Figure (tube, rainbow, N blue to C red):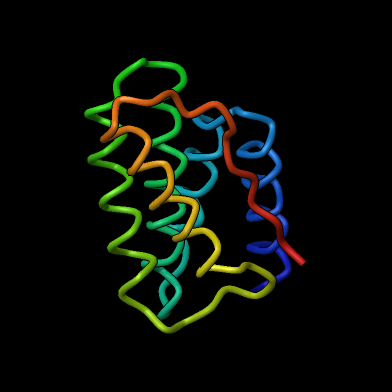
Length: 117
């Protein structure tokens, strides 16, 4: 990962963790367009995750959130590639936990945080 890509990823994660999921999505989408290696689908998975939480929190659209969570899970689970400093397995567990709550009709009270080392 280039220093520029890492700085953009950190910025996206900061936006994500502050609840600004739309902005996180925008930054992740820019990275996704720029990356042309085996990590591309992981960035796409992260941007689907941000989009899902945008649908859930800003749009009050649980159906849209579930669609995006499913896409995120597929992209993140398909690969054994890791992104430097991100725990992809933890992120997929977070996605699954949110899916379960939405499917049960429960409120997602605690939103996940993404940590990067």
